[in-house]
Image (tube, rainbow, N blue to C red; front, side, top):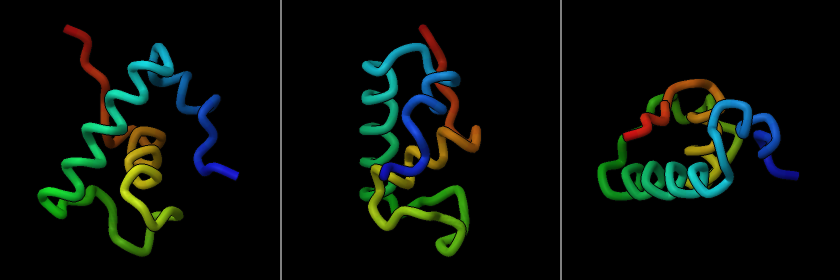
Amino acid sequence: MLYPSIDKILTKVDSKYMLVHVISKRSKQMLEHNHFQMKEEEYHNKKELGRALEEVDRGLVTVVKK
């Protein structure tokens, strides 16, 4: 089962398309710069996509509409 739940995150992001865009950008940043906003042991997921979802869920990544 995916942690955190997509339904829970969609309360913070308007659409699934926007969520995919934000998560993909954040996970690429993690891979390229090795920059994480939480300590390594605080993440439930091992991969960057899951970790990006966790950051959005905790409010560490915000979505700004232009």
